[in-house]
Image (cartoon, rainbow, N blue to C red; front, side):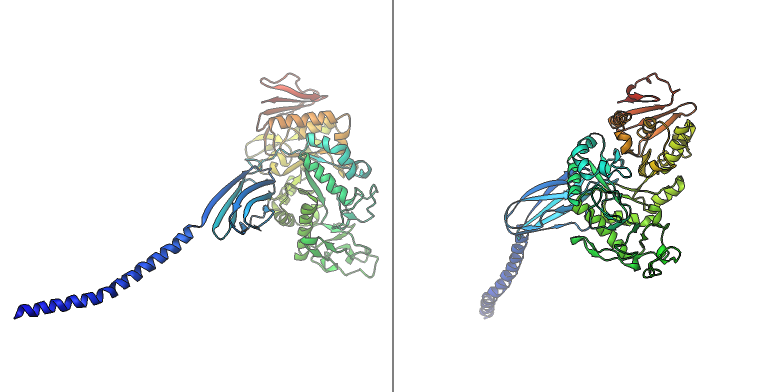
Length: 545
């Protein structure tokens, strides 16, 4: 009797199992479907095709093209903060795409990298752009030409530079410094007598040096020859349009429009001085901050503490670079405003080269200005001009041509160039458009002076009248060729080995060494292991490669 009951229980258990199992199976199946559905979603994500394109360019490169195939409408995004990199388009349709990349030369001490991410509904393409530094050690081999002198409008105007000199410039120089190109107080008739150092309208680039169109042609021609173009930027002061402080509107198109007025003029400008301002309509109306530097009496001193003035200056530089192709800046009268603003303007405009006119013979003063810019600008080496050249070589005082570097107890060429902390920031020169006209003019042998700066650290800047003088032209070009052959840079180590009765220095470049001798009593024998590269009366270059 018990067995039938057990069988009945088993039978009931079987029936219940058959009824419950489908429910459990359905539940299990739902779980599997969920997992499968999730896996399908994951597979959909994995089906997004990913690829990487690597682009490596040199420090002087400014353009490169990249090709990819998009399987649908695409968009691209450049790394935030990569202001040095641009693409000609950031969206497009399916098909084969050629993306034209453009970038500025990398004159920093470090290589840099940015990415462009291209996406479609089923693609992700990462384009990695890496650019090495212009020079691996942060140095540069540039040699600059000052492409004008005072009142040289009829000789070095834009058209003549383009047609008669551009090709010759490219043979020896990597940079050319042009005069102020903005319309200035005194008129802008081409070939006129206005040099341009009292600018009136920044966004009008028609000047006595030539038209805006001629300027663009000149810059393009120089670029084709591999020459960088440095603008003479006058932003410390500005002339009014028809009165003391009624400035023209600065319309820089896509870069912005600005209208400066009396509130942007320094409060201690002569416009507020009754002994200097004769116009009662303007007397006392300058409402800006006190000047952050020295006053310039010939025009209105702009208040660089003003955010609005800073924005205007940045737009101006960006416009000069974007619309005309200028590569860098020579800042005029840098004693007139604090150096930190030059640093700020360079951060925003990213010049290939920046140099400030801080006219002072004191090493400490010029060094302090460079530091005030955040070490973001070079400076003309006035200390070297005065000590080594004017008071040294010109007077036969060879000992004045070198300074003792207390860090290593080694004598090196005098000036900013004597120390490794400042030589990279030095632009050396013999004379310029200002010193050539006053008591600061160098009065010694010109070729010997160039032998000094072209065998020294820093970026040497050759003055136009010297380069074009038939007595010096060949010598200067031969010295530049010798300098380049051994790879001397603005940071090259140069040791002065004789100063008693003549000057001798030994320079170590990237590709060799150079010995410079200056003075009538200098030995004429060729140093062991060297060969004579070039020589003249009272100077000689010997090289070893």
